[in-house]
Image 1 (tube, protein in one colour):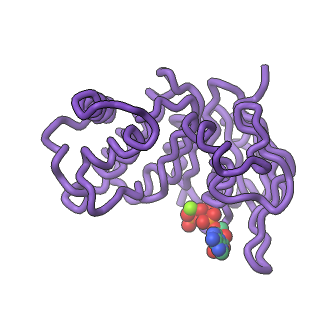
Image 2 (cartoon, rainbow, N blue to C red):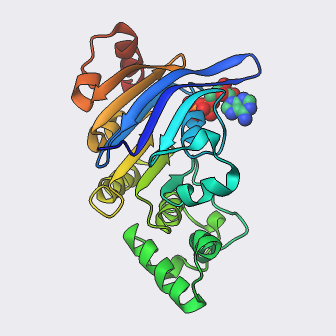
Amino acid sequence: MAAVIETRDVRKSFDAVQVLRGISFALARGETLVVMGGSGSGKTVLLRCLAGLIKPDAGSIRVLGQPIETLPEEALLPIRRHLGYVFQGAALFDSLSVHENVAFPLREHASLGEAEIRIRVVHLLSLVGLDETVLRLLPSELSGGMRKRVGIARALAMEPGVMLFDEPTAGLDPTNSKLVAELITQVGSGACDTAIVVTHDLELTRTVATRVAVLIEGRFAALGPRDDVLNSDDPAVQAFLAGEAR
Ligand SMILES: Nc1ncnc2c1ncn2[C@@H]1O[C@H](COP(=O)(O)OP(=O)(O)OP(=O)(O)O)[C@@H](O)[C@H]1O
Ligand SMILES: [Mg+2]
């Protein structure tokens, strides 16, 4: 079966800094690939390339069979609808209420009336464990964990087949981290059954990953089934994981 996302030798530099130096992988439907790597190693840059938000300097990226690095912006829009992107730090619109944040993609892409939008927003919030009392609140009035959950609800709005999570548990306490991990696992049992999760969080990796990649110096130093990678005897991978476990 064709891969949902497939990259070959993706490279990306900023000025003289080579951030991605040849990333190749294929993600099959039903998988949750966790990408681990140190701060500044290029995890967010990789996700942004996969979502077509930035173009790689070299290499190819196929999303749902389409070569996205060659497509013009208009042709990317229908493909992006299949990718739910939970941005690092949630990236909610500060001046918009929770209702307007979650409704945003629905207004952008679908021709729905106000009543239908409200029903969908309430349903999406219920999926992430939030009720109607938060609808009118601004992001600044939410806890960090609630903001993350609203970001997940917004990413689920277009019923994407694939979710991209950037550091979904960063800055959360253990209770909220566990809740987010459960949400990611649930995502895997719904219509959206495929995900890439970028994280430093070993506990989250153990809970949600089917495969794990470790990004070191612009390349995947390891890529394989979760337990194989977590028990890797590659010294660079071991050193990275030992650092994360401290
Ligand atoms: N738009 C940009 N312009 C210039 N440099 C950039 C840009 N985006 C990212 N970089 C650089 O690319 C490198 C990788 O950044 P990236 O945000 O992908 O790291 P990361 O692995 O997500 O780190 P963190 O775990 O801290 O989120 C960094 O050195 C960063 O400064
Ligand atoms: Mg990042």
